[in-house]
Length: 125
Image (cartoon, rainbow, N blue to C red; front, side, top):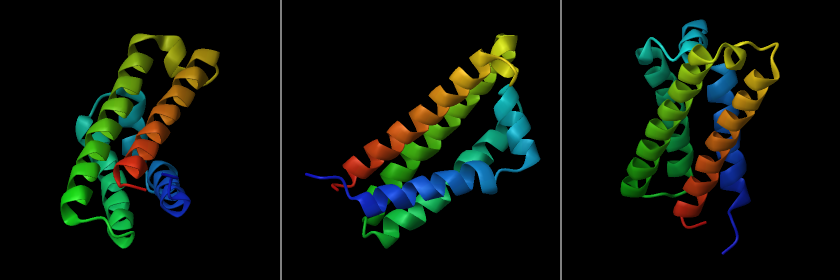
């Protein structure tokens, strides 16, 4: 069954807005260090709210939406927390002048995008 590209594009836009437009300085700091977890939780929550709204607009049931936003909340939190932990533990991964930083950043984004593709597939698209 082909993927619903409108849903995929909508969720990718949500990801961009939540990751770049609505992220506060405190969230950026928390994601960079893996500390002050409440800010990482709030950041993941923004993703969850936006995604949940899109899923409902696209006709997902409340049950399906609830399960998928829980997946997004947990995965987004874990990916961002782990990226911050790695950046703190391995200084070259936390320094944006180092290649290791950009490899880790790209891997972080790849994981987020794979979760979005999985969510679209789980919607039955």
